[in-house]
Length: 98
Image (cartoon, rainbow, N blue to C red; front, side, top):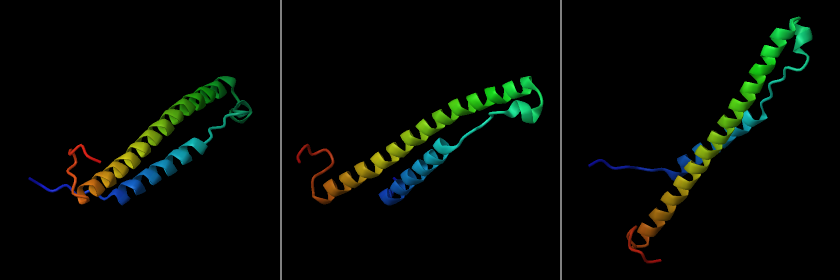
């Protein structure tokens, strides 16, 4: 059977990177104000407005998923550290004692 090695510091780094991506997505803006004048046609401007609205919805979902994934990574690292400390203390992971 193979050995599984876990580096909780790298998992915490991943959580931070995911939160950085979350922040970048959250700060993105898709502005379509006054596009009718720029494109010269109201229907095209309406399509751009719909695209911006759809992007805003999708961006919100991406932000939420990035946060969930970052939180899960942080929890994995924390739990791993706790179990390592528990095992190092001579208490098996399922000993029931504290």
